[in-house]
Length: 139
Image (tube, rainbow, N blue to C red; front, side):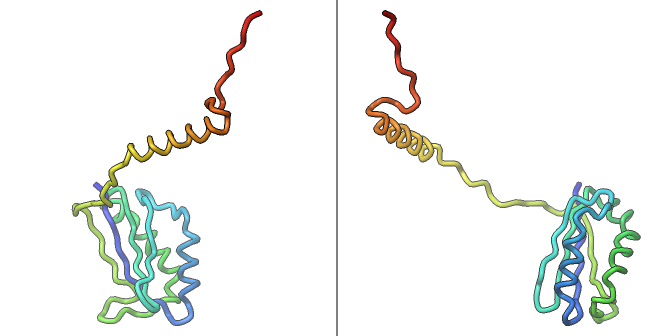
């Protein structure tokens, strides 16, 4: 079952763009089981990173590598306060995964559009369907 990690950050003033670029440059961070993530700007100087993983054990196994990545940007981060340090991480699995509701297709509208296109093509071809083969007479 999929698992997720979420990390809050507060960036030092003037370091926002460098922080975003650091995350953009991580197209393939080589973390086993990592399926992708997103960096979200939540306010002035504050960000949240959400990562999706194949399973919770993948997060546990990748913690040393993630700490190494954090070390590459630690100098751009402010202490979160309350004894947290420069990050506020949480992770877990077993919740509910949900998505946007599927929109019902309108096949009738597509059929009408196709019919209108065919009619317009027939009018351009002088009453004959556009692209239709002409019958040839044998003499």
